Length: 183
Image (tube, rainbow, N blue to C red; front, side):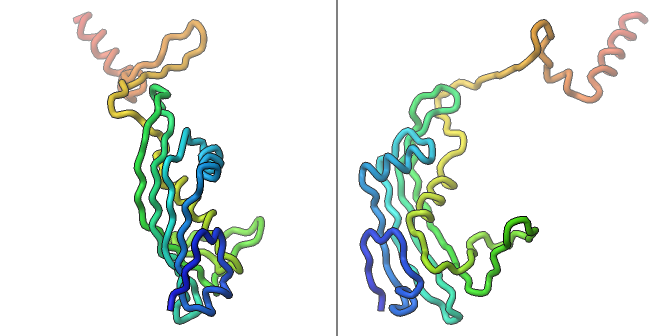
């Protein structure tokens, strides 16, 4: 039987194991969305919801299955005008009891399954919501009608490098043309 917790920002693993599963729903208010927006460098988060369930598996691992919905506004990388993006994504996280978290300075291989985390004592739902939003938002938001931009950086007095200059056989091609003109 699933218990329901409205606005629980974090959940104790003990609460989940006793109930078998736990439903949750986070809907940050205006002030919370403004703080998340500042943290992530967005202009604005108009809507944000994160809802789903936490359940215990047969081997005492915990599985989070959720939906994240958000409407975010960011600056266009070309024009700095606002760009609004709708994000709707599914989230799955598995918290595994026997996963060893590496200590500082130790090397470890990343697991192939990026949904697996060590089993914590407390599942921070708000942290998972913010991480997912950060990963799903466009890295370089761009308006559809933004003109392409060209950036060059050269020291004073130097000529900018062209595409032809970067090709490995550009100098040979130039020499070939010079030789052909002299024939």
